[in-house]
Image (cartoon, rainbow, N blue to C red; front, side, top):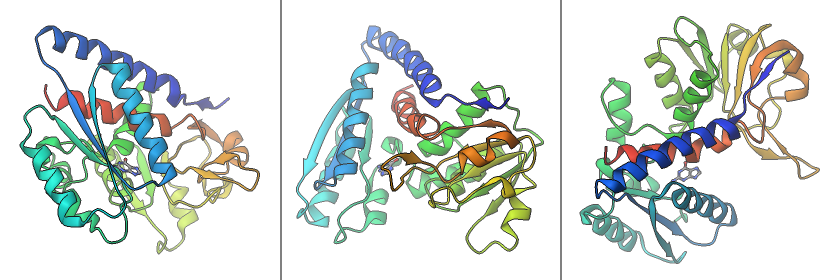
Length: 278
Ligand code: GUN
């Protein structure tokens, strides 16, 4: 029987641990504040931003909300970020992506002070991760490592294959697995013989952004499968990048969608906020 990795339960454990830490920090007179910037009215972004604010409230982190109009200029947004960089009361700054087309996301990310970059997207944070130095780590891949560790799954010495090479998930995921002493391959849309490469994996992390693309023909018997994708199918039901029903008989452990990787992203964001003052 495969282990179904319960991301909801593990994220709750992490949030409860953080809540205790934040209570202790408050006892020492230390307050944590996260500035959350949303530009425009993208409904998905509104849901994510609200969930982040709720998590802050649960843990005892102050959330400062900045909901800016779709029409804001890039210059004005960068000014707002610079102001928050200077504000000593603000420990973390998060700009919800995507941004409207007239705003350069790279410029925005680079403007956030690295010591407040709780998303871990700043080139300095990514660079630190790649050379094994301290810095904020992108929340979704950091959450995957926690799912593996807290499920008792050994990474050291394992063949790890990451399918997907995005800056937010695939690349930092590969670096984190390497940091845990996995033997890591990054596969992507141009990889030749993708099935053969995927079938080498003891731990397969899938972040391709295509609903149910990975079926049992990509899976080595007994592999651990981590599904980072989230999509709505024709019946409005959530599904991942992995065809769960097809692979379930062949895996030793798997993350479901929903309730696997998804809830971990916010838990790790909260973790980054707490470590910003620790
Ligand atoms: N949009 C989708 N995921 C994320 C995330 O993790 N951080 C930010 N800032 N925006 C996002």
